[in-house]
Length: 370
Image 1 (tube, rainbow, N blue to C red):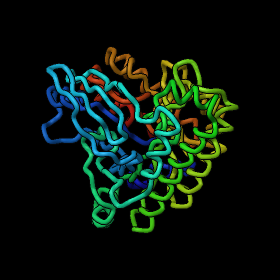
Image 2: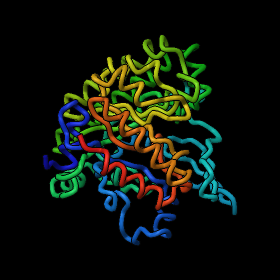
Image 3: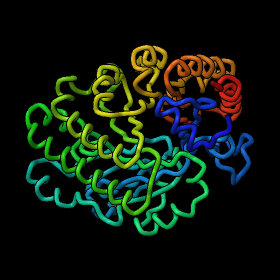
Image 4: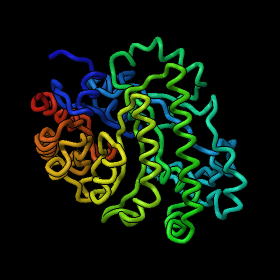
């Protein structure tokens, strides 16, 4: 069976017969630098070298659209106001995680002042490759994007994605995780308004792109609704507050011909039946350290959805033998589901050597066929 990457992933996400499992990955920028030092030729993108199936991705900017600016800079950090109006500390040490210092929504009055900014428009798109970090994405107008899509050879061959945060993730970025969780219990009407505004913006933007001829194959929806030990909130609260917006968004995406890949870190198992009911086509990334196991998930849900990930970064960062064993284990388990895309259980830090990842990709090629 000779098919393109676009056709392969489309089949894997819908339970149709494919030639092999899919391949995708998200290496950190400094991981790529390490790989270039260890033998990956300069100017060669890892996705091209390893024959990944995911191609270009358009990120839908769902922020308030405020002008970002630098507030302070020292030898150790840069303090900025981002386009949500959040004060963020970026450490110059490349291993440092950006830290929100002050959120933009601290009261209903803040929300009422800014909510009208959440409207679809011509300038809510950036684009780049799947797996590259968004700071490397290019801002582009919808008109320019439509022209580029029509002539892109990459889009004709590889699976083409849109990307958006879900309502929980987008609202958390403006409110903060602790405040949002408290408000879900004490101010559900306010939270519902914020979730609804985000869902409306994204649905309108996706429909606008579709009308312009920007016909992606799928959409990657990020929503970190879980942590290591379980959901951030009860299943009942998911059902009451977030599920209706997921269902509405995923229905709109399907109407536009998009397959839905839903991302949540942590142990998301309790929510999987409701996520399936809401309309996801694939679950990603299934963190090993949170107890997620693609074999168990495939046994329970493998006829209803596909899976992407669950390859332990800890194992990939260990010896080459351990990395290879992990790859074999996850491939064999993933292949019991209706469709499986090989991917780490989050993204690849620079602890993963080029030698290890080459060995792992050889295993995918050896054992990934159906």
